[in-house]
Amino acid sequence: MSVRRLAAEQPESFAFTPELEAIAQKLIAKYPEGRQASAVVPLLWETQKAAGGWLPEPALRAVADRLGMAHIRVLEVATFYTMFNLEPVGKYFVQLCGTTPCMLRGAEEIREVCKRKIGHERHVSADGTFSWLEVECLGACTNAPMVQINDDYYEDLTPENFEKLLDDLAAGRPVKVGPQNSRKGSEPEGGPRVLLDPALYTRGPGAPATAEAPAAADAGKPSGGEE
Image 1: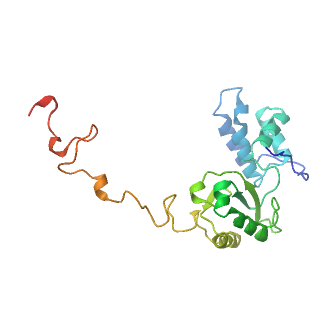
Image 2 (image 1 turned 135 degrees about the horizontal axis):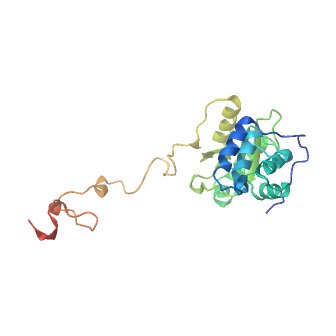
Image 3 (image 1 turned 180 degrees about the vertical axis):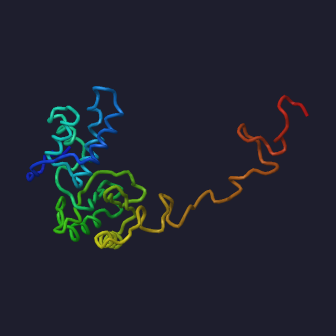
């Protein structure tokens, strides 16, 4: 595991907004009295969103104080889980999957688009719109190569459609979440290719009986052999 440290430049302070405080109260209420520390992961997640996509050090202290925890304990959680960003990210944070299935399907070409359009890894673009990071498997191997941008997956990428996706996001144009080709979900492109015969999914007279589906001729007969 790589070493994760807090960003060198930090804001002077962080305060819970009324909206974040309301969320904190709901999260803490899910746990028994005296066990409010159990809410640390979801509260850090909500705090990260409220802080613009990352967790500055004052925010970690604010979460610790709100939960009655030692500051170091919250720092330990934030530095352990890679879902928490310890340095500023762009408005659109691109996480590029570089694990084997995506690599074999063209992730290196997608990486080059990131470098050309955004800059080096972890760099926030000059206008604050984009930053990117290569990560391990995001669990969408069937639709490789893919990226996660903020909370959404964008799959079946090519250098061309990925570059257009970035341009559309930057311009505020609507974008398509999920596969960027004609594929539906994780089906084969162009639709299903096997088990297409409708007869496989219907039962008619003469169909063999099973324990779950009696033969059509026997349907409706009373049990016990009575006519």
